[in-house]
Image (cartoon, rainbow, N blue to C red; front, side, top):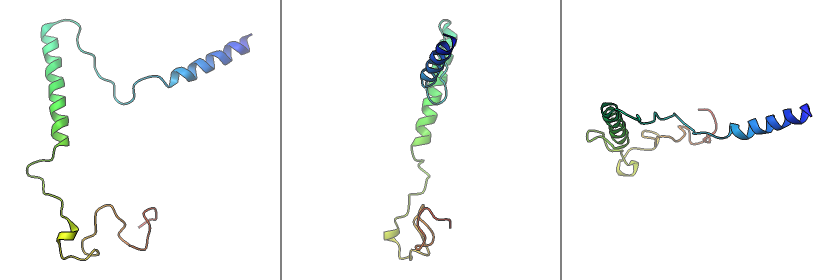
Length: 94
């Protein structure tokens, strides 16, 4: 009987191991206190604004250059992310 109990506990532990939130955990809002609630809302608004600012391109950020609009050869101005040597594949070391 103890072998069955161990097996059942192992299966239950494996089943519960997959449950849960992925990524960083969020702090729950305060349950009481007007000042604490206001501080929490201000922190969340600041986080949301920082996230939006991070995603949006800056007004001073340079626009990406289209290689078709320049007269440079591909060896002089390669497209970012591609291999530098055209005879090597993407998975081979440079």
